[in-house]
Image (tube, rainbow, N blue to C red; front, side, top):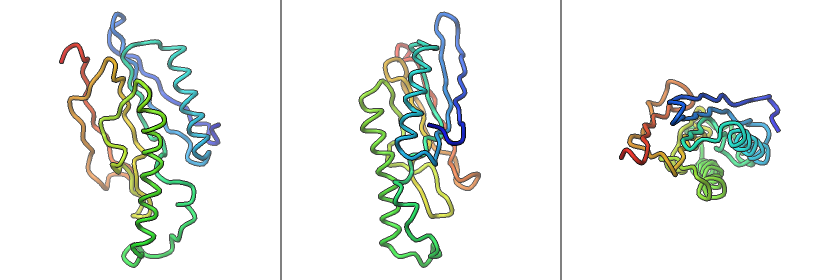
Length: 170
């Protein structure tokens, strides 16, 4: 499903007795929602088949910001002059994709992101914003002890900082 041939990086750390697997991905923006869902399914299938561990983190840019219609809404209006109507439409469409993923993919799985699906981790010159960047922790074995966003302006994406601990240690 990847138009840009994007892949995931898999890092195994921890000990042999208690491994932690971290998967970092960047899902394709041009493949549409169905393409991204297919990539997500591929990642889950690969990780389950090749790294059957109890402690797992899947993170990266899932490109869950805007519904396809948001890309055809007027962009030529300068941000300072943009009508409230278009701003609200774009923001609403951006939030819907992340919330859909939260509801259909993550709420019913073993994964949880400590940052709300309504939060914004991305802004492209004020035109598009939403939650593109996810840090999904295995909520069966791990829990977040710290979670915050980095400063705006270093990139169009805000850095995510998440600290996790084994649930049995907390």
